[in-house]
Image (tube, rainbow, N blue to C red):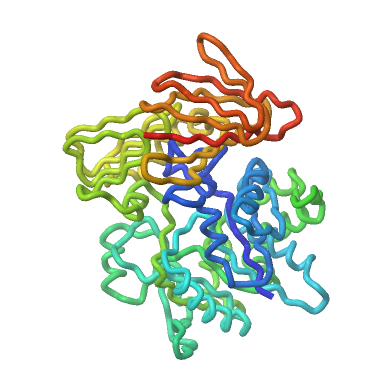
Length: 455
C-alpha cells in the first residue's frame, strides 16, 4: 500500500516576519484559501486509501492535527520530533513506523513530500505519481524532478541519465546520473541549455525497507540513532514521541546528502527520476509568493488595510496596521504586530539572514493562529485561535470590526473598561482602537474567535 508521508518540520525563515518558528509557513495561508498543509492534503485526494502520516516538531503537533480536522481529512498519526534534524531522520522515523504498522507480508511504499510545496495542477502531479509507482514497485527509489523554466540558483538539480520506462500517457522514468548542488548563475544557465537537468523537488517515492537499506549502507550512524529513538518512543494518543536524547544524538542531514547523492557510486541502490510538470514551487521566498498570487493591473499583490500610490510590481501585506506605500517598484512590504519587513523583491533570499540575526525576535510569534476562512465584497472573515493563558494586542481596522466568540471564554480589555466574551457573544470594535484579548477559560485548550473584518 502507498502511504503519504508529509514532512512539516521546516522553519520557513525566508518568509519572516509572517513565518516564525512557533508558526512556520506550512501552517499559514499564504495564497488565499487553506494553509499550505491543507493544500497538500487536498492534492493527495485519490492518491491512496491510506491516511497521511505527518512528521513535525513537537510544538506543532496540535496545530497540524487541527488543520487536518479543519480540512475534513483524517491523519494516520503524527511523529513529533523534539528538535529538527533535517529530512533524512524524519523519513527514517516514518519508515520505521510504517514497517511496524504494516500487516504481515506487506511492503509499505512511502510518498514523502514537504508540506510547503505548491503544485498548480494536481492532475499532472498524479500522472507523474503513476509513473513513479511503477518504478517503485520494481525496486527503484524515485525522485520527482521539475522541468526547469529558468536558471534558478535556489534549487538543487538532478542530472538525468538513460530512459528506463515510458508508458503511453505517462511521463518517462529516467535513471539518475547524479545529484548536484545549488549552482551559481552561470552554471544554472548551462544546466538549462544542456537539457538533461531537472530541479530537485524534494518529493520521493520508495519502499520503507528500500530506504532503510540504502540509509544503512550510506549513513549507518543516522540509521542506528533513529532506530534507538524509535524503539524507545512514547505513544501519546495520535502522537508518537521519539526518545528525546536518542533522537538529538542523530546527525542532522537531508535525504539528498545522506543517501541520494551517494547512489551514483553504489550499484546496489537504484534511483530513478520522473519529470513533474504540474506547476511546482517550493514557495521559498516572498518573490515566489508575488509570482503565485494574481496581482492587479499594476502588478501589485496586496492584503489587509493597504493603500498604494504610484506603486508597481510589489507585494504589500498587512495583518493589522494600516500600511501606505508611495513610489515603490519591485518591493516587498510585510507587516505583522511585532515586526515589519521592507525589501527589494530581487533580494528577498537574504531575509533568512535577517531572521537568523534577530534570534529571539525571529523565534517569537504572536500567541495566536490567525486564518482567513472567507472573503466577499466588503468583508473578510478571520479565525483567531488563542492558546491557554495566552493573549494578544489588536489594533482594529480603520472601519472597525465585529468579533464573535466561537468557543471558549476570553477577556476583552481597553484603556477604559473590560468585558468577558462567552461562546456566542459578539462585540463591535471601534475603528483604530487598540484592544487586549486573553484566553481566560482554564478548561479550554484554546479560545476561538471569528472576526468579521470590513476593510
